[in-house]
Amino acid sequence: MSTTGLFVELVVIGSGTAAWLYLLGASLVGLELLATKDLSSVLLIPALAVVYVLGIVTDRIADWAFSRWDNSIRIRILDSIPKYRQARLLLYSLANERLCKLFDYNKSRIRIARAWTLNLLLCAITAPTFVCLRCDSLQPTGKTVYSVTAFFLLTAAAVLTTWAWRILVVNDYSRLKEAAEYLQQ
Image (cartoon, rainbow, N blue to C red):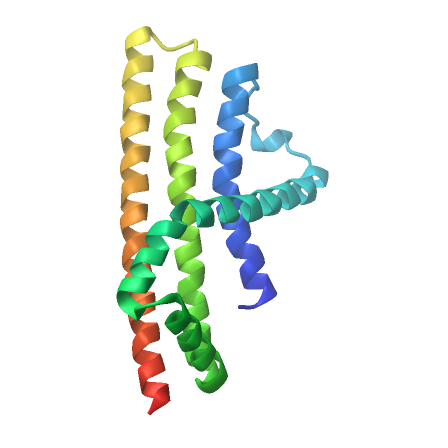
């Protein structure tokens, strides 16, 4: 994967982390929501750097959180971790560049889906918290409706993202197995 592609991937992941961290901070200390007109162009570069670092950290945490499930799928499809490593080595040493790029692209989608599952679950907690603690203009009934709606919609999005992650992982390992078997012929 190109450096630019990896950078964009980590910014996509980090933007979700920045969203729930902002909601958490706003809930706890009452930060005012920033209007885009108040953002200085000078702050955009440091903000992008922070989002990038948040993406790196979130990717590692999500990798750890999903590792058991991922390993069980990998072993079910490829029989063992050594066979998986052998298949990857075979693919990246013998396959053409287009096929390798396709596998890299699929891995990127897997990492984004995995990390956004975590981000959406944390947003499902922080968004209702923000509504309850900081949306004083809403009546108690409105706070409840908005909080419950946000919680269920974000949780449903997390479930769908987890489902997408699982399908992507199963397809990736199945295609890797097929490619390795073909390349061994």
